[in-house]
Amino acid sequence: MIVFDLICQNDHEFESWFQNSDAFEKLVKAKHVVCPVCGDTKIGKSLMAPAVSGTKKKSAEKMAISAKAAQQMGQYMQAVKEMRQQVEKNCDYVGEKFPEEARKMHYGEAKTRNIYGEATDKEAEALKDEGVEVQRIPWTPAEDA
Image (cartoon, rainbow, N blue to C red; front, top):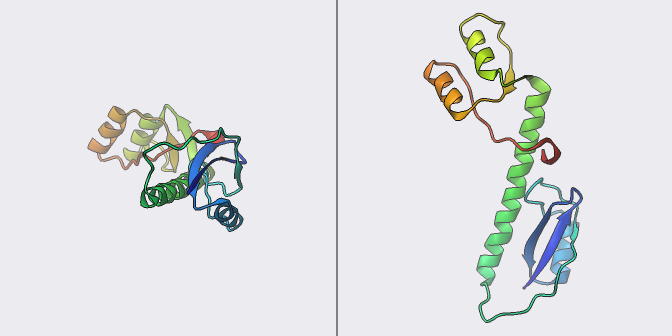
C-alpha cells in the first residue's frame, strides 16, 4: 500500500491510499478518485515528502475504508454544490431579512415565493414554532460550491 498527497484542479489537497502506483493511475483514469471537498475528478499527485515507515501500520482494511470515506465525502460535497446551484437559480436571496420575509409570506403580508438567506439557529427554531415552513441546508462558500 502507498499513500499519495493529491490535488484537484481547484487546488484542494488531500491524501489517499492505493495498492500501488499503477492502481492509482487506473483509478484516476476511470475517474474513481474524487476530491472530498468539491467532488472534482481531475486529480493529480501533489508534491510530498518521502514517508518513513514506522512500526505501526494501518491495516489494508482501514485504508480501504478511508479511501471509501473520502470518495463518499466527495460525492456528498458534489451534491451540496448542486443543491446550492439549484437554490441560487430558483430562489430569491433575501440575506439577513430571511426570518422577516418568511413570516410576511406565512401570514399573507407578502406574495409567496421561493427565498433563501441567513437565519440564526434561534431564528430558524422560532419560525418553525410559528408553523413557518423552513429548512436549513448545508452551505459551502461560493468558491467551493
